[in-house]
Image (cartoon, rainbow, N blue to C red; front, side, top):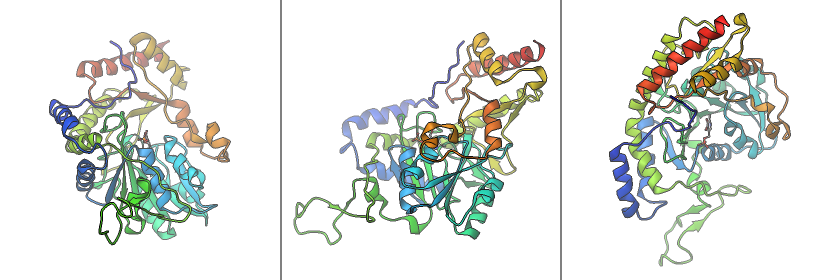
Length: 393
Ligand SMILES: Cc1ncc(COP(=O)(O)O)c(C=O)c1O
């Protein structure tokens, strides 16, 4: 057996494939048609709050978020250092100074202490990432941000369907974003994203920003071709629109997949619980702590490996599991301030010891819904065997 990090989370059902196949012929047009509206309205129903805008990927949704909060020179945005780079890039692109927040070492999400430590008069927004599928401490973040009149953006790229007190992530902040990349909870053929705007004041002609400034002419026109088929508007001076459009076939698929989110998450949760239970006695592994009334949807299974007692480290674990059992664990989310992209653009200094420590000791197992039970059990048993061997050698 061989279990690699393959970056694909789900397979499509026969009926999904059939609908897609038929629509390849019948869908007219292939973009900006009825399916984007269907996808957005189904997503709004699922989320229960906010206005949804489908885009080509989660990074584009972050770009739109950065545009609509109207960043000014010297504005600061607090972003966790331990997240995927896209969370920070969009805000940097639109001129923000990125201030790195540290994580809570038990949940691995941005800590409220670190937010409080980094807040200044220039803080415009906080980005709360619900990393690996576990909601961040969002209620406390929101109540603190409200007092300080700071915008909260939820990065739900990895946490579609996760809950805090039965309320969906993405419905707490002013704005939230989702990703339908190949390895996410659902995927619209490899790429896709959604911006959700919960606060009316940010709902400022996003249609136009998303698609080359295109709007309908306000007062209609006597001939549809005069002066042009559509208007091209200036949403805000100096803010040039993009084309972040997602295709119709992807939207049709997305609108069907929404029905399966909770079922897919159920499988993830059951498996993650089994994995953690079987490994419970190995104290050298610690998994994300799930606070009460939080629903963790396990986009990934990650753990900290502390093998010092046995004079071993995470590299010993990862290489032995690969060499002996051909199971490919990886290390994710190097603290972002360590990368050239951020260092060379002035966002290097940081004081995030917990992000550093976690990164130095982390392991992430391959975890996707279509892994067979046989493979999954093999992965558990192989992990146990490697942990035992590392204890004894
Ligand atoms: C936390 C986080 N934010 C944002 C993104 C960006 O999403 P996309 O890959 O769809 O652009 C990702 C994707 O990996 C992510 O994991």
